[in-house]
Length: 183
Image 1 (cartoon, helix red, strand yellow):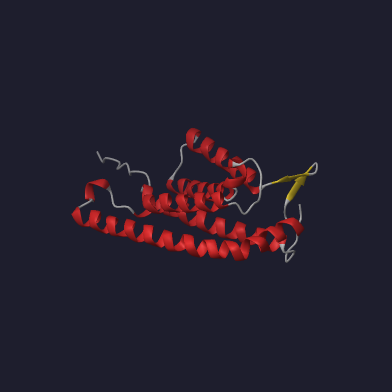
Image 2 (cartoon, rainbow, N blue to C red):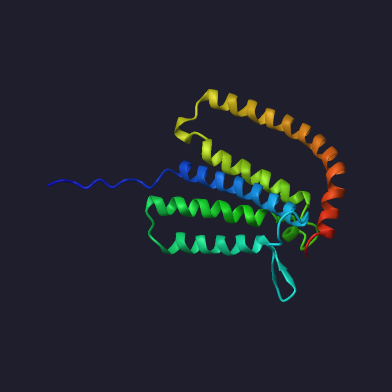
């Protein structure tokens, strides 16, 4: 009698990598589209219902809710789980791209809190996607991890200075685009 092999589910790191990629590209695409729409370089794709602008974070919330329901109530194969990972990354990017707006209940699209939230999530998804399994962590991983952490801290300090400079130069222009752009 032949035994049927039961394969484990697709590795979590593969799903985390799909989520990371979907998140990154969706964030870049949404920021680019908003800038192009506000600069009137492309048609206004914003959804308006009864005079209310429906922000794209709402699409992300609905997508995340749907993905949670599917993952809770459906038995999925590897391909379907991969699609869910991509949709999850897509929904997270749409939602957290406007993190500052829902954190502060309004305000400008260009709030710093949104950028910071996206950077934190990219870091978390990156760790999930590329961190070795706990059983395989050795002393050299701690050394590399510590060096990487110190490098990231230094990079972040340098980034803060350049972002302050960029913020001083770009923020007035972005705020002007937001004021003149479609509502």
